[in-house]
Length: 228
Image 1 (cartoon, rainbow, N blue to C red):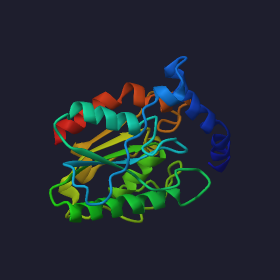
Image 2: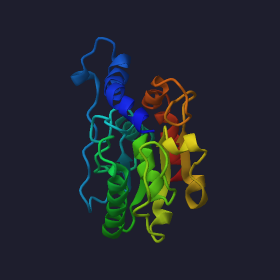
Image 3: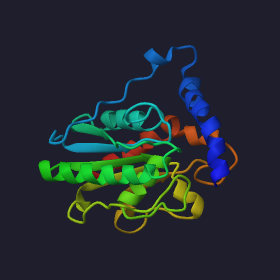
Image 4: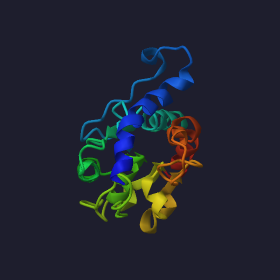
């Protein structure tokens, strides 16, 4: 696994750039890519807080490939619902072996703090690639053994669980090990794993892993809206 991670360090940043730029044609990146929504401070009591764990080395606070487009799609689908966003604060890289655990802890702390400060707020959790591992762990599904995964260090308290309206996961590495979200959150979870995605299917094609923001976020937003 470590030799594979080493190879990823070389080609993943370039593929991330290509995945963002390719659909834009000749438009400049600065004008064609909308900036990610700013993170909402604790006690900003929007009706729904969208908590996003970005993918490995994914640029943008929420992530340009999945998180930003997903948040925009949710805004479009829920025009009369106030939304806030929170980018999970974690390294999201391959160089820190406890990257996922840091994200796991930060996500649970944020949701717990928000739930206490905003008694009526609900949550949509979004995770892409390594960020999906972060969400997995936070829901009590261990990503240990999966690519850039790790053991669970915190889980969302049972008292807050009913307020998790929807979980949206893209390119989840645990899929490559035959795992998925089960149990309490199963009916509120929509998982997307593109055909031949080398991260979630052990496929051989790197490019499907970067297709989620273009092909799947509208469907994901519709699913989340149906759970509110």
